[in-house]
Image 1 (cartoon, rainbow, N blue to C red):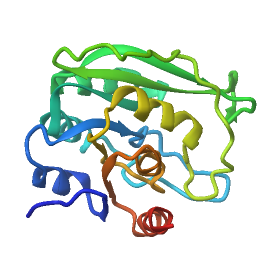
Image 2 (image 1 turned 90 degrees about the vertical axis):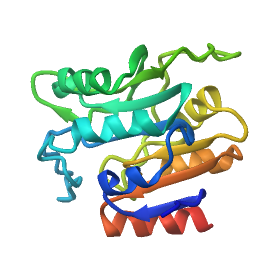
Image 3 (image 1 turned 60 degrees about the horizontal axis):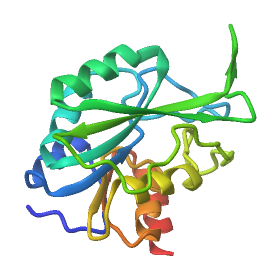
Length: 211
């Protein structure tokens, strides 16, 4: 089966990624489950956030489908940073940068007020540095998490897509959620492919992309 571009599938990425050809996407931007059993204040959860069985196989497949000398950006949860790094490196990625996204509010409060998100910049091979590098601290705008319990704002995703992909590239998000990565890619004229396991979030993403 061949997956067409400008598509989001309601599918498990471990079943869908093998349908993509080797080195067929130009950039990956994704927000996988943080393996923290997260539950939002209104009770919503993230599929597969309670186990790491998918973890290394998913990143191995992402490495396979990403073009040589290209970038990927992966959000991660700091309590499991060691597992994320192990999975990236086992797949073959090199960590070449780290982004911090400071918030004006706290997502949670326990030992400290947790007021940031974070992501790693990963490289496959030896990509050229961007012509116009961006800073590694990008302010976060609150989305209200109305569409997804861990919804990421377009204002932080769009510069990542613009900087680390080129016109004509296909942008992949194997954990597409409400489709924000794909929306960012679409706004910049990139092709996109997304997978989302949860049927409700998939429907939300599909509606957004059709508008």
